[in-house]
Image 1 (cartoon, rainbow, N blue to C red):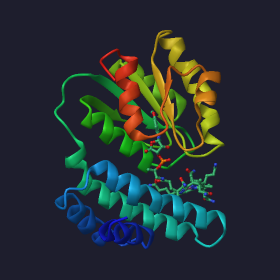
Image 2: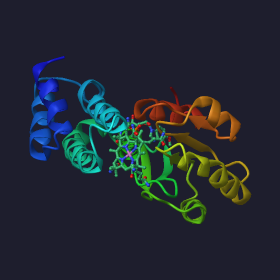
Image 3: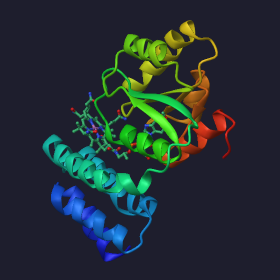
Image 4: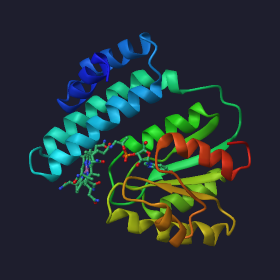
Length: 211
Ligand code: B1M
């Protein structure tokens, strides 16, 4: 890994917001792709802090500052990820009820936008009824559900059922760290993606607008 990416990973883990922003900017200037910056430095930083948390070597305050540094870096990365809106379709996206994790969803939003989709982000901790209301209001081509906890992913089937009661042909994509293809199939989701880049590919596939 290049020195900049190592420094970036460290800055995020230590919650250094401004350093994170500056290093993302420098990494882009050296010609590194947004994907490499995300996959080689930013996401591993969050994974490692999560592993430390599991081992009781890091605590909630450290997770919070690392998340803030990650978000700050993502702000700098966003323009490099976004492309022209080419009217590929509309996606309504949210994290399910009881779950306040936002970073993965925000990255999915950025990658979808970068791939030409318009995205209405309805936020985190979204009650099932709010998903139904948003679906009714926007009539999106795809509804996207994110969950980071093995407890909150259990909310997904309930959202799918409620939205399909409104529109039986609703296309619903699910994702998030504990979610698997097998789980997605079992709950009747239309699609699953393991990461934000694949989410954009899957959304295009679902709408038949190219892989
Ligand atoms: Co939390 N947390 N957290 N946390 N947290 C995890 C998820 C955990 C794995 C940490 C651990 O124990 N190792 C664990 C969950 C265990 C489980 O249930 N399986 C956990 C826990 C336990 C908790 C609390 C319960 C802790 C507590 O209070 N005791 C609590 C719950 C709060 C709640 O939601 N009610 C909690 C709180 C928090 C913070 C608020 C401190 C903070 C979130 C801040 C924020 O998001 N603004 C936080 C963080 C930062 C994490 C870790 C460290 C990092 C998450 C992250 O941002 N990853 C995380 C450990 C880990 O993930 N290894 C952890 C980076 C991000 C880019 O990846 O979100 O996976 P990810 O998104 C990916 C893919 O999943 C996918 O694409 C994204 C980009 O490639 N994807 C989709 C996501 N959504 C998708 C939707 C799609 C398609 C793909 O289609 C629609």
